[in-house]
Amino acid sequence: MGSNDATLEDFVDFERLKGRRGNFEAHWTEVAERFLPEQSFDFYSNFPAERTRGEKRMSQIYDATGMVALDRFGAILDSLLTPSNQRWHLLKASDDNLNQLRDVQIWFAEVNKILFKSRYAPGANFVSQNQQNYQSLGAYGTGCLFIDELDGGRGLRYKNVHLSQIYFKENHQGLVDTAYRYFPMTVRQAYQKWGDKLPDKYKKRLEKNPEEEFFFLHAVKPNTDIDPDRIDAKGMKFTSRYSCEEGKDLLDEGGYQTFPYPISRYYQATGEVYGRSPAMRVLPAAKVLNEIKKTLMKQGHRALDPVLLAHDDGVLDSFSMKPGSINFGGVDRSGRPLVRALPTGSPIAGKDQAKEERELINDVFLVTLFQILVDTPTMTATEVVERTREKGILLAPTVGRQNSEYLGPTIQRELDVLSGQAGVLPPMPPALLEAEGDYEIQYDSPMSRMQRAEELSGAMQSINHATDLVGITGNASHLDHFDLDAIVPEAALIRGMPAKWINDPGTIKKIRAGRAQQAQAQQAIQAAPGAAALMNATTKATE
Image (tube, rainbow, N blue to C red; front, top):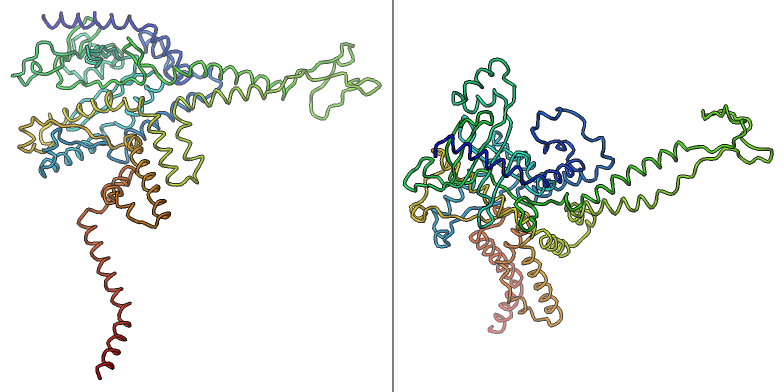
């Protein structure tokens, strides 16, 4: 099949996928209108031609609870999974025997260090794009990141792909292995990317209107004709084709060893490829809250600037509402007012219902869960461990999915890109090279430590129980069942203490030896007066 035929096939497949997700796009638009109003038009066809940049999109929003909760949800996921102030994962060999080798340990430590340095380099733009990905998960249930090498230099570059631009398919195991990105670029941007590969019709427009926009398609598929003996695109696991919509011209063809679009879902319904989100679950609550707020605003306006009821006798035609005004005829001869305010009713019921809807929205977006420690700052250490354990249990089914669908493929893609850049990664040790560099990822994020809080909770409860027995029986041997030298440093790691702050076994041995010497010296000092008295008594007895 020629390149042109392959390009036509890409567009046919893309149009087929595009036609299948109309229901999702209607749902996403409704979500965006209440949680991400700046994206409320992004799922309309042929954007950005049918939208006006910079226009106001919040005219229908009366309550901002959903928007604020979504922002906090993104921050919560970032702090749980990918906190930028710490190394949230480690690399090690899949073979435990290799992990015992010093050169293998040093190599993985160095690679992990390079990976974090490249990921958080200023030009990589990981932090902002990663945050947008979490926001997309919260709003639409699906997030996508494009990872490639940095143009013009060594390093990584990240781009969050909006859901309106990405279409994908799963393989027989439920893993995303095919992606079509349909995106606009100006002629100037297209020339920056492809240079002379750009067709002449675009080059001519480059002089007249360089900011004119056109649509392009990036198709990434499994390579069904892979040749393992080749090191070029023919030997890679995925094919890559860039083409322009106008004319269906092929612009660039290549391949990837790893899938460049890590795509994750938050919830996933049976038989559906795209995910579902927290925002979708509380969309009814957001709608109700919006209407309640609108009603309360009307009610408050009427209470502050009331509708007046007056007796129709012509006396009050010149009635004035200005401060300090005197309205003759406003009361009858008995002093009863002839003008009254229209009753507006009590807002208490509406406020109570609004509070319930806000709490529901905050619950689904994990906001309430993370206010526990803030609202009860006087908890004991044991109570904090228990609350942390409970959080880990509640979050594990949903947030833990991101490790396998998002972070794992992201790390694999990053290592693949860096390994293709000469001199970035150190040479692999011979033993690891013989094992074909097989490695695994060990997550060390706050979320992974929450999941391990079950171990810490069990240890603390067991030690406390044994301590109570010691107090009752006076027998300290009950504590002999616990290896405190193993428990204490492991508990410190689970609670987030950096490993470099924990003394190594050699240092601990020196500290204990010094303490033993001090104890012996103290005993000698305390025993000295008694020894001297004994010597004096012995001397007198022998005289």
